[in-house]
Image (tube, rainbow, N blue to C red; front, top):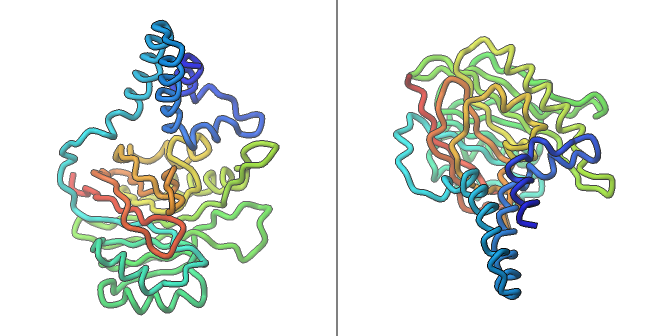
Length: 297
């Protein structure tokens, strides 16, 4: 069992996705494989087996190599702006309270998903004083302290989904560091079924998002959104392969009641995410995620 846990962590990319997208399912919860160590430790102590105890060094070392750095404090450097990402939930009954909670973080950009026709005016009113610029396409929106220009619908709709589904936007922001492309995207949900990990629509949407980013002419890009999986998931590779490495923080954002995974992301190109953190719960089933971003070269 120690060897199996070690192998799955160290060589997760080798787990095939052919049957039930098992590789993606594993990568969505990869840090939690570390729980095998304390469980096996208890069993080893019960058996009073020195061999079993020594064998636990392997998964412990592998986990520490992959994720141990996330537990260590360190100076991430200064940042120029803060961006905030939040799936506010279409069942949120306290949109005004949610907006007020987000304002406390004082970010320069706020990206929201699952905006409903009834809740949107409440968010617009609550955020208007601090964020004079905003754009909305379908169920996603972007609020900014900097002027937004060239706002466009970002088409990331899988072919099988009916017309009217709109979960992406692209805008340019005129900042003191030059013009920056800002993307907001909400990829389709995934499901764990008897047949395996159903992520077909999400993966197709990630391909479309990756194609759009590859065609982006502006050098600096900020991407915010709910991607319905972790950055380790190979299904997001069309996107993650083009973006600079994220700050290594757990910052689990979902579900809000007991977060086990970060499926809400803030990524950059030609900029640096210095730190990522979650904010206190709102009326959503997701936690808000905030990140410091260094834009200066």
